[in-house]
Amino acid sequence: MSARLFPPGVPVSKRVFDLLVVIPGLVLISPLLLVISLWLLITQGWPVFFTQPRGGLGGSVFHIYKFRTMREPPPGADPLKSDAQRLTPAGRFLRATSLDELPELWNVLRGEMSLVGPRPLMARYLTRYTPEQARRHEVLPGITGWAQINGRNALTWEDKFALDVWYVDHWSFWLDLQILARTLVKVVQREGISQPGQATAEEFMGTAGRD
Image 1 (cartoon, rainbow, N blue to C red):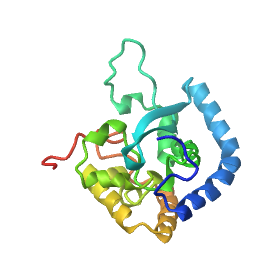
Image 2 (cartoon, helix red, strand yellow):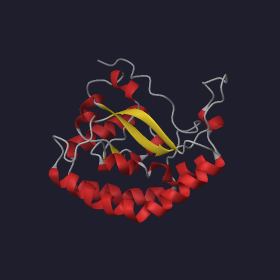
Image 3 (tube, rainbow, N blue to C red):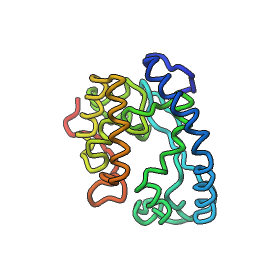
């Protein structure tokens, strides 16, 4: 999805709020972004940012930006090494504190994401959703969302998607404010960072019996 100041179909109040928070926010946290970038450069090497195609508004695809938390597999190594093996100590800290998500503010500024919305998932998942699950793409994806404050990665994929669709059907500016406030609490509590038995979250392979 190409960057747009006001993406079509996105409520103006939601977009204006995002810009009013993100523009000064990026200025204020720029020293923190620099410190984290230097830390990762020293401990993990280049690149310090992770980019990946993700599903966005209307099922279009954009590239998300995050701080890199995993080692790149060396040449000739098994590319299927587990997340737990590739996750670095710095990466564990950034994930536990959600600081790895800070570069996504650039995606919000570009109009590819919102502060609040369903989490943008890998682009290859787009063909694996049921029609009902695909409704999560009726709104901009978000840095945090209804599913993130109600279990995050501790939930099953189906439960997360049900919560995402609930958000689509019940969106309001007041709901976004509640989600942002509760997100701050969840970050401090560090709940639901990973699925049980996983370093992060297992891949979504589709829902059995989908339409």
